[in-house]
Image 1 (cartoon, rainbow, N blue to C red):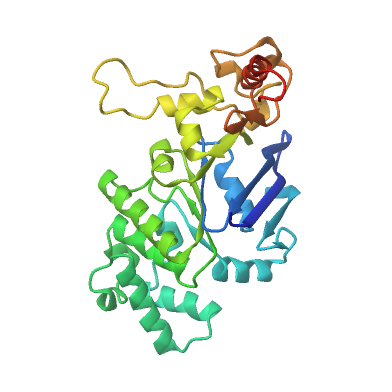
Image 2 (cartoon, rainbow, N blue to C red):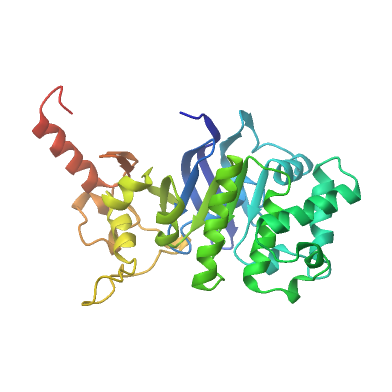
Length: 335
């Protein structure tokens, strides 16, 4: 088995407001192995993007990394200064964001942005960097790549802009790419093309990916393992196949049930009642319990921790009770 490229332990991100300091990400821990596609999924406000931003040092005030340890390639990076983090971000960790227009400078040509990024991290001449930029555009499926180097972002379609952002993310052969909602702003057909491109580029390079999304369909297509987040915490984590087939947490089950099934011709699309709680109003106990149809009495006042629940780990009292029941039925020595 490959070793861990990234390890996150007890990550806590706080935000200071006039009403006090609140935890937007609370005690999040996970590992990403070499060459693994690790999916992070949940509704808007779950803390997914903040977790990714904390890893690559892109938290802006009033947000701050309050606690935790982030280890990349065997070295701790949460305590790096801004300059060291910028170097790490470009050379060893790439990033792909939701809206390519926010990632690309509208005043610079595509070629100039690629060349500047390449030369900032690799010892290449301007001509060598330009050749590399054209090769990258060809690799991500941009037609007439040398001509497109002279284009400005506004002259390109959304799908082409996102392909260029992928080229920027991979231009220095990073070991990890953090992709934050990379397909949300795209048409469905273009989404599939971008996901397939991301899969291919990672497979050919052995690059690890942290894929942040609210789309369980995208996760099912590409992820090896999944972490489900709710109200700033990981509520279930485990292999993608096991979680998709047998989700242990009611929230994960609700996300799975909300996926459109083209084979189902009758009935309404399933949905999870209610909304994600505000940071200032996260309920006691399990944060999901006001929306949960199978909650137990202790869910109202006792916060569950991640514990074994079949093939995954879930922060759920019901899943823990079910797992204990199975263990008792199997008897000693047969669990």
